Length: 191
Image 1 (tube, rainbow, N blue to C red):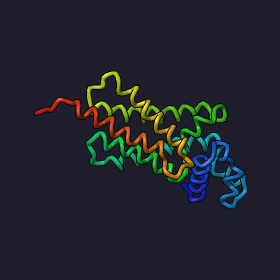
Image 2 (cartoon, one colour; image 1 turned 90 degrees about the horizontal axis):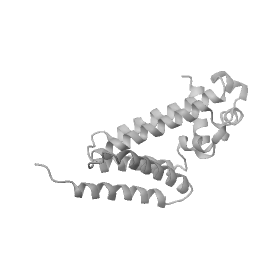
Image 3 (cartoon, rainbow, N blue to C red; image 1 turned 90 degrees about the vertical axis):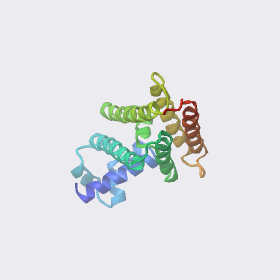
Image 4 (cartoon, rainbow, N blue to C red; image 1 turned 135 degrees about the horizontal axis):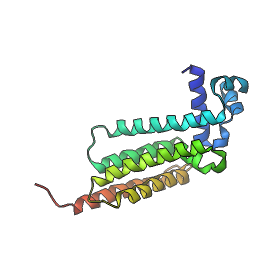
């Protein structure tokens, strides 16, 4: 990938995560990089193709970071804390989740982009469900609880985006610790 192409993708991602999906126009991207919008078209077939690529890149990057943070951790509570820490890092940068920006865009996002966002959300729910399934016998409850956790993290990130102390994200993070600790305390001891 060319350096200019990478820079344009980074600019678009930052614009979306700081503002809205609409902020990632070829004109604005070119302006930030100091090139004409027609030069941006050289690197990307069209805006829809760029936006779809951004969602796919975001998913890969997010899970790579999550995997790196959880490497060597077997404790489910610590793994969920690492997930919450990724959301806190976004908040500290005054970023929203890229996929949340797409979800909020409504009709501005294409069907392919919405499908890619849904893929990211489902993959994250599956990851959370797998972590939860190791904490207790959650046979039918891990998936719905994973959706609640993901919704709490995404919502708290949105609400705390401009807050200096991230009170909602910190509350969700603390709740996750309590949730796991309470289930661990209820587990029968094994020999």
